[in-house]
Amino acid sequence: MNAFRGSRRPLPRPLAAAAAGVAAACCLAALAAPPAAAADGGDGSAADASSSRAVGGALLAEPGVQVRPEADTPSLPSDLSALSWTVSDARSGEVLAAKDAHRELPPASTLKTLFADTVLPRFPATLRHKVTDNDLAGLGEGSSLVGVQPGQTYTVADLWRGVFLASGNDAVHVLANMNGSVAHTVADMQAKARMLGADDTHVVTPDGYDEPGQVSSAYDLAVFARTGLADRDFASYASTKDAQFPGGYDDAGSYVPSFGIENTNRLLTGAKGVTPYPGLIGVKNGYTTNAGNTLVAAARRGGRTIIVSLMNPQSGVYNAVYSEASELLDWGFAAAGRTTSVGTLNAAPPAHPADTATAPAAGGADARGQSGRDRQDETSTPTDRPREAAAGKAAAHASTVSTAAWSVGGGLVLVAAACAILLRRRSAGKGH
Image (cartoon, rainbow, N blue to C red; front, side, top):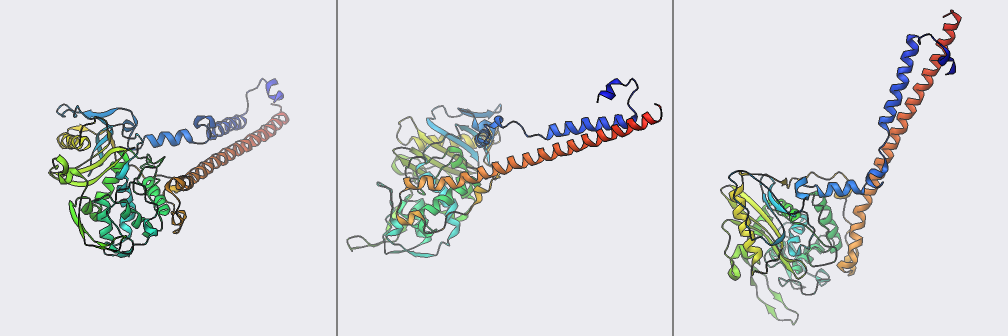
């Protein structure tokens, strides 16, 4: 290099071209280098959190009420007290308005919509099942029950009516054990939620019974309802007002004849002072002391279906979850076509393989009688490991690309230097 600095003559053209190649190689190598690990904390956690909160659109990740009205859009109801809610068009998936759509809250029995999305397609309605004591093990204290009796045989359709109408946790547990076990079904539900882009939901129990860490969101509940309503059987059960449930022998050995059950969704039946909503087609209500009142409701009018989801009204007004749902349904029908959507329920399927992984084999921990609280870590850990593996593979790939780029660049530098020495010698021999 010192010889080049001492020369007053310009570089020969081949040497100049080689030098340009060296510079280009170095630039390419620099561009191929991976970004600093500090950009996401070195483990991808910042990127994962950001993408999770942006599911359905950036506006839905913002706090407070989100709505984009046009000139003739009616005003939203002024007396809404639910901690979070959404109004969506079922056909297009457009979210017309929302409040804290991704706020994670206990879902109560509205989580049964995800249970149905997951398990309902797996068994024909006419399949008969004889209930065992093990099928009913582990029911939470104070659970809502339809009246399933061990030793009795029920059709799958009977059990689903018990789930949708009476919100029977006993019917849920029987179907969950038919699916392998409660623990198996919890894992299946978690995988289904991720497949649907419902990243706010963490499942601990299949029936929505309160357990620490079990949460969902108004956004996710709307996704579950929209998915379910596309299934004919789901839609039929969700819109059934009343039915007969098979009887059987009770614990005392007395025979109990079949009995009537009524849907607990008062917006559908008009029970306890609630005015039935015209055109209502379901979907599911819920209540626990921890979750408060929760509701997902859908109605059809003039060829359009509107879905609303509400979680935990704070007003203290009797039947507030139903009155506020009615107001939001009215607004949705009036505002559809007159407002710009603030997001969408059409979340893209996730990229990481954990979301479609096979659930644990049947006869797992729950068949041995573990509680939902014990299952929490067991069912959440497997879904985290593939994320870490994917992040590791991505980092390894970036490192490989970077190393290859620098290797190519270094090779070009050596070739260019050799060319320069050769050209210099030739120039000296010719007296240049």
